[in-house]
Image (tube, rainbow over all chains, first blue to last red; front, side, top):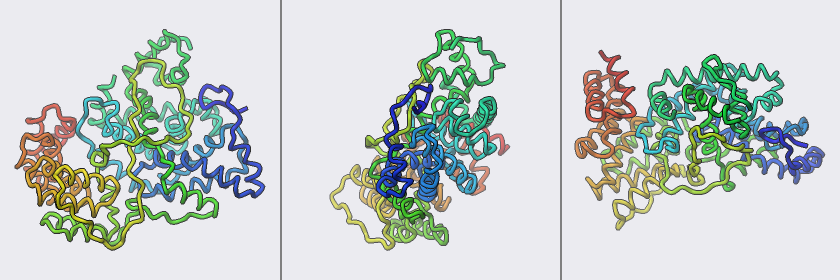
Length: 204
Length: 308
């Protein structure tokens, strides 16, 4: 039985996992169905971590799906195949982000600085949303690798502490510590960004 | 989960946040968490981030990149994905953009043509997101991510807006074919068409439409708005002097216009890049004087302090 995405409740059997044996045995139809079904989730994660307009999205999305394909043989059924693919996408995209960090940071900085006019409803204002997500992405660049991965799983995949622990193999207290440190850095980042601070303090 | 009197010592109550998202917090714990969220901007932002990111993660079934990804994975290799706007051609592109924008400003259609030769990619990467927001939002399918129960407490309800997606990109044209003029188009038609083309990443067409708008309806509301749009674009990648000229032209024509605040910010930013400190100081001061509640107020004050 699979663990639910949050809360650990039971889930129905994963229909994709039922294709896994065939795919691993060389059945290309099954492999294609698995890859087609997981590709949107992979692309979504890559866009979130790199930024939707990042020119590296196509390459990194492909790298991620290739990594998913390569990892199918090691899938142990502890999560759904789609979740597994998303975890792989998080790691691949974070690695790519580190490798291509300087260019991304320039782009994010520009976006953050270019966002301006507030709307009446700040919660759904796309500009403010872009500012928050840009701050999140630049934070990923600044965090140590383990903290970035943990925090991304927590925020992007919306994993519980237990799930992050299972996915990363780190003890739960280590996960807790990594998230706490990441959150502290996020707090500092917000406090040192007057524009972001002004926006967020109003949300209290 | 029971309330436990969260204090400032409990920096970030991860378990309570988890329980809140599962809807298993007791009333007392809800109060504790609410109090913490009132103090902690990082936790507050963390709670809204999944919703923010979910919007960005939305993927259309028809996204051509999905096909490329699956094809590449099946073949065991990466396949070049030609998408307008994704891949910048570094060599010479900046120069082409600069020349194109300069031509645009003298009103020639040649600007669009030169722009297109570089694949119109650099500007796509640097156009402020604020300028890329479509007016017509399309429903799209979110990835099959498990999205949990949302907070069972009234922290900051964030209704997920319709995802913002550009239309599916098409194969880029290497040589520009002049798009048909719209002889009977209204100012609104041209503006909508220009914005639609810009959102789709078709910058040659967008520039052509903005130019037509400028020629056909100078001083119209749409044309004035386009001056700020083009100014922002130039500020991002084009010649800063032309960006400044674009903002100035808006402010001269519409000093109390709805985009005056944004134009002032753009003007100050352009002056900063040009190193014209005295004028920059005046521009930030003007922004604060005319728009004391500007969201860029903190930035303006910071720069003014630096310029002292």
